[in-house]
Length: 197
Image 1 (cartoon, helix red, strand yellow):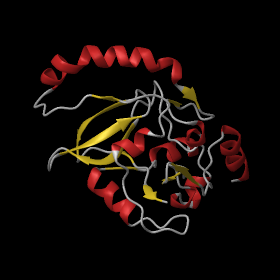
Image 2: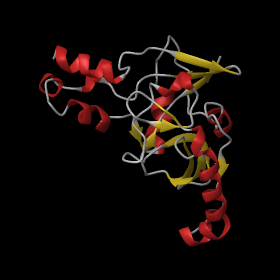
Image 3: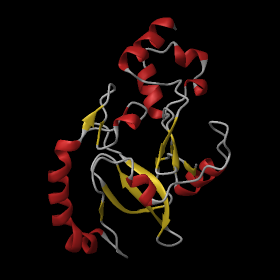
Image 4: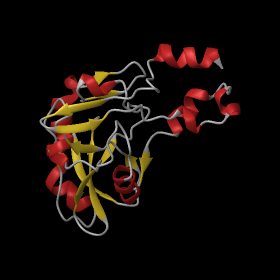
């Protein structure tokens, strides 16, 4: 087991972090997205340990994400919640492109936003920074090392926020491409909670 823990340490996965970060009176959860406590003893000895950790990142549907934050007891606080999009944008290094609208299908979205979104992606590429585990994100350095693995091979970079369009859709913000859009609430996305300081 020791060799696997050392391997994870040298990769820079901060599994045991217990930190919060405050920006403009909002406190942000800054825990690792993988939890070693969820692994069985057999899994801890597995040669596939890194993949097991990646699979168990803090991803869930919108309703579960909202419940997770509201029931979170962390850093001696129990009043956590999903962030608003304005709060979440503060951890990004760049301005988020909001590709929002009441679209019924991708074609409708594409007519209004696709070209603009492509230009936006090209303009923010230089601001992506790389973590020790290989994430490539436009996120402030204080958050970088606790973020999940998100890069060209692991594309899902979406995080839930509190904003809802209707009963079916809520907003996600993508920290790889600095884009926000409406996502069906049944989809899985990452969860990072906030509270007012």
